[in-house]
Amino acid sequence: MESEVTKRTFIGSAAAALGAFVVGGCTRRGEAAPAESFEVTKSADEWRRILTPRQYAVLREESTERAGTSPLNAEHRRGTYACAGCALPVYSSAAKFESGTGWPSFTAPIQGAVRTKEDPGFFGPRTEVHCRRCGGHLGHVFDDGPPPTGQRYCMNGAAMKFVAA
Image (tube, rainbow, N blue to C red; front, side, top):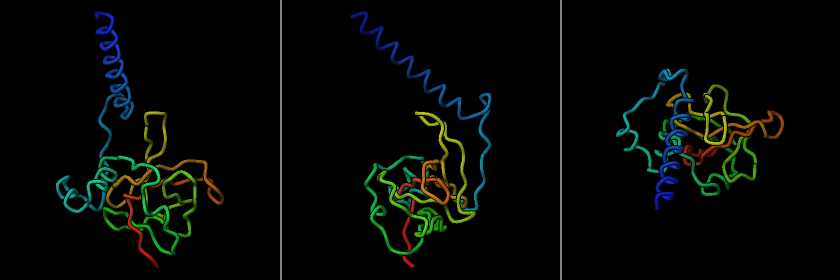
């Protein structure tokens, strides 16, 4: 019985240490990360009133929807993908491609529509993409996309709304 408690204690301690490392890795020398400012700001309650629970989880809590669950994967009409939080156009349908990942993917955003920041991630660093107007989390960008950019902007469908042309 004692070895079981020791294993649990070890696993719990290791998980706590890993959590502290990941959280500590998000800032420089334990300092708070500087707050970004955005044109559109709302309280958590205001965001919850205008977003679905799924949209709130993705846009405001940086969650990721399950692969293959977004209706935007099958969207092939001409148009624009806008941030579900503030309606800023972020991607053109001309930049959309089938990545086979289960998430809507684009070669590039509309110029000036998004910001990026390093995301330490659980499995290594990656680059987070968010709306430059409201700061909503859209997804991540990877360097394994097709020409002309070689980038794959892998976006959460819940973070966007499609506007047909």
